[in-house]
Image (tube, rainbow, N blue to C red; front, side, top):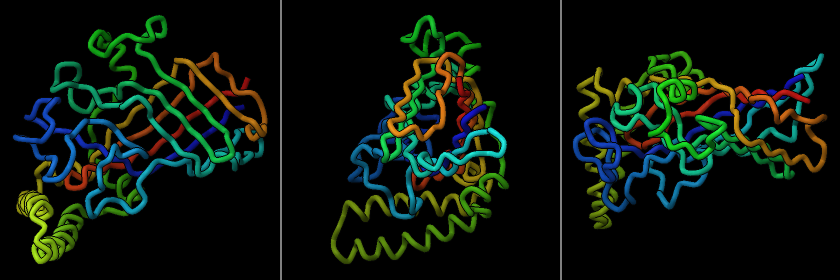
Length: 285
């Protein structure tokens, strides 16, 4: 018997883009930027704690990754309602690591570190880490072998408008960009009226980027909105389970790997957000 935990939601991901180096903090030659009044970009995948960053207008209404369904695979399937709505977090300031092609090709990078935690208001908690080498839990990413990077890394970048459309409701990226422009132009006018020079500067840059995208439909600003990266591997590190009320209906096995499969995609270069969707499979002892 296994426990299946489905999760999804929107995340904040503020990163520089090629040809900027991976440690560029403001954005110079790529197509993502830290705007006037914003903190530096840090490349951290943020599922709930946005690090003091004020979400840009047009960001998904319901940010954050949560459990949407959980059940045991006995016959018939048994819901685990205590997990539904639980927060899903990646801890330790996780980042996609290809380091400007030095470690992997784009679209094949791993998330480092990978420390998954699922917590519900009732106190139910699942935590599992994944290591490049279980014998060396602290092995840094730059010392990992190509095989170790590939095991946790994505399978590549793919255009998948069906997956993105069903998950987010965004089926036409050009329409989405036009609608965003229609939102930002009056927002800038209001900022001009109140004399907010910082907001005007930030919105002017956002509008310019969107206008460029509208006349360049094959640009990354457009194509990335329907692109995804898929990941799948067995989590092999330390596991922690807190089930104070016995909601899981049994004892989970912490000696075997926990398979996880997920995708990231629907990248919005204007709001610096994307979608995160997947499932965790945990065997019972």
